[in-house]
Image 1 (cartoon, rainbow, N blue to C red):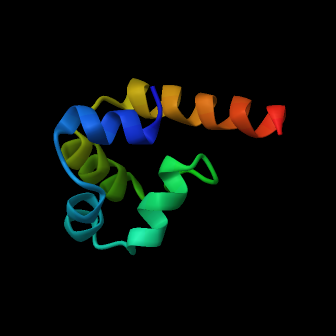
Image 2: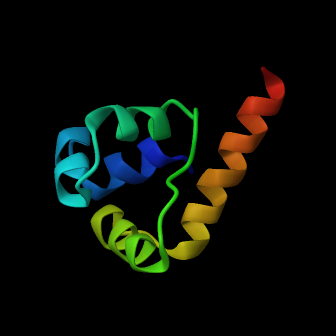
Image 3: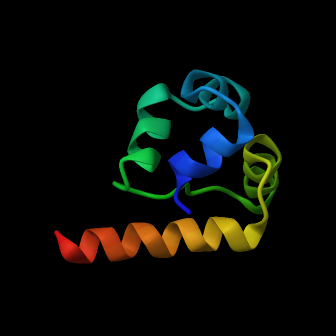
Amino acid sequence: MNMKELRVRSGKRAEEIAAELGVAMSTVRNWEQLKNMPRMTPKGMKSLMKVYQCTFEELIEAEIEMEVANVKC
């Protein structure tokens, strides 16, 4: 599951995610296009999991998917 799939599952628009996390829309877009993963403090990761309604393990899965996608390029 990637970041876009996590967002869609949460029922939120990318704009909502950006606003709730206090990041730029381009940041969320980069996460969803598998260009990079969120880089946050532990407190920020807790907020990310709350906004995306996901577990830490699901974020790890999204990171692995991004790494695999970047290796194929």
